[in-house]
Image 1 (cartoon, rainbow, N blue to C red):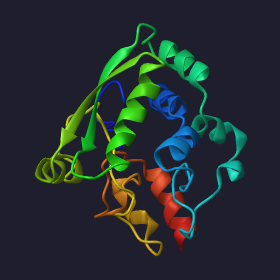
Image 2: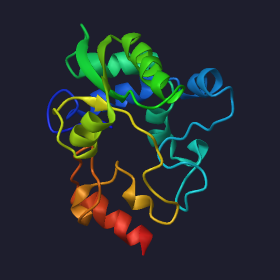
Image 3: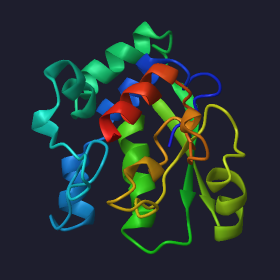
Image 4: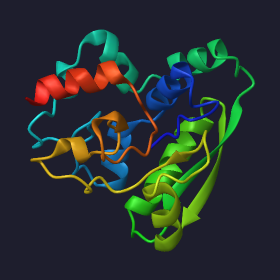
Length: 185
């Protein structure tokens, strides 16, 4: 999750750089012993999921591991000397979920983003990240089991203008909602 209510995460170049700084395939190999799937948005098996290779090339490039391009985007966004971010991690989950934050922090460090890991207990996670009551410009990770294959719009990355949906990233784009609604019909 990326809280986009404030800088630096309200800049699409920073969000793209973060995405490109994380080596998802290496994470699958090292943390999950190759027994997981790196997916860009919705996991395989969800009705509207797409494999990475099915995304248009101009979108796919932001979902792939490209640390040099990530550094370039950060510099373009005005952060050539790097920046500091907080990454909220649910500390109540066992490994490898709890180690995902460390791997993300390392990838971000490699492009110049200094990350402070903030391990949250269940109560703090529920009262802040889950309740969407957290500091603008922070990152958060969490388990991807909060939606069903029949209701992928429950996924927290979707815009909140659809009414009552979880929106931990604070994205509100009416045109996006219109397209998703049309696609889901």
